[in-house]
Length: 476
Length: 53
Picture (cartoon, rainbow over the protein chains, first blue to last red):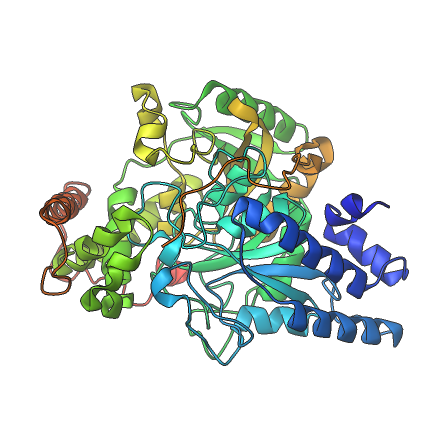
């Protein structure tokens, strides 16, 4: 097996190699550290590499493997985390210049659980500043530079879990942890051509994670495959006395044939390749699922509700930053003013959004609750070019008519799995999502495993650059 | 907002004002859908996916 093959191997392959002593955790970890150092800066994927911690954890993993102890399927396997998870080894920057020297003296619960599972933390990965909470409108919204997809350096890696997506897509680490308030796992999964699993709200403890929005934030994995996503989720899931929202719930799929529905008008407003690839995905799903036909998304103001809630809770979470005037240190020009906009959200609007939320969740449950998954394109376009405001990237008015499952799914706290399903313009990946029922992640990954058995998009590897093809705007 | 950052330019203050108007418009749109909220309709103050039966 070549180093490249190892770098792009899925978790089951790595587990087998480790268990057979065909490779050691130390070798995998050194490979990850080398690739993070070599490719991370090219794509602006990394905030801090953690060689001391990684080598220490890898040596421990190897010692235990030699003694016959395997803590979990992740034992000895390297990974990275979005730099909004606290660790004591390095700053936890939240992707934002005002916090570039911020330190915590403990591991976030997610990091601790992965350490208990024997995984090896190698890096804190780049992210959109403050997880995008202040309304950024272009790719240059991280103090570490605009994150770029390994599939085309001139295009954005998505956000806000940007580095987590890049690191998996470029074979820097076998898996990474991201977070989603509304879209921050699914969009990087799309932009980088990897699998991204947004868990049910409450499945994973957020203790030690930056809070943007207490009633919407979730942590979840970005991985090579749907099977890998489930493996990582099993290590992360569960109650935590330090996060009252986190619960112990079963994570299993029924043994019957999956029952899915297609979102009505799912390809309306989609780029042609996104629509064609989605139709091909549905055809592949038909080979092993009962497809019940189309279901309509109830016409409700999900986006307005999510926007109002993110603004109000985000402004409260970052009140100290806003009132200090240090928003001016943020990278994105929109973020420098967006905090003030959020700060002025009316209390009555926030409360009415939260008063309307149960009715919107009930409507979604009534429409979608009979299915293991409702399928739709992850979003209606490829990812956006770096250097152009997002709202100007694809100005075709037809594209503005697309339906959106990201805001409804997040408002209701529902799980979703995004998987690559082909390529669109400029060599960029396209993706589709399975939106599930509450606590139904295993149903999604069961469908995802079957889908990835009959397709090969998750095996594609980008041709990586060893240096930036042109100079970037200097950082402040 | 200049109380927090005296260096905000006029253009930035204008951008903030437009954004605040947009936020108020979103709040208005929320209440154009569905039934009129009644006095007893409580907000979600601690979210759980199981809060709605």
